[in-house]
Every structure is written in structure tokens, then in C-alpha cells.
Length: 65
Image (cartoon, rainbow, N blue to C red; front, side, top):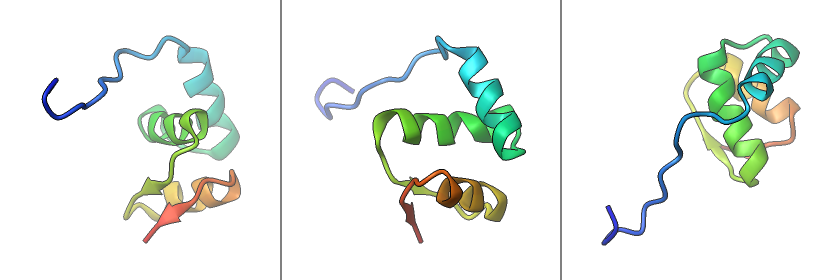
């Protein structure tokens, strides 16, 4: 992985953040982890999940279709 320059994202350090995003956007904590990561890092999101996609768009995350 070092040769590919892939950054690992370890266990969530802010579990309350994931729970807050899940509650605010009516998502599972699993789905909210992807949305929170995109929000925190300013990254776009790719998903085929319509609920997650709608939540991402509503949160201002660029959705790649």
C-alpha cells in the first residue's frame, strides 16, 4: 500500500459525529460513515444508494453519477 500512496482511514475517532450525521440525514451509521468522510475531507461521493445520494446532495457533497 505504501507504493500506491493509499491513505488508510482507521477506526472512527468521532463516533458521535457518525451518529449525528446518521440522525440528521436519516441514514444508518454505516452509510453515514461514508457521508461524514466525504464531508470532513471535502471529497465527492460515488454511490448507487439513492437514500445516501440524496443525503449527500442535501449536505452539499458533490455526487459522482
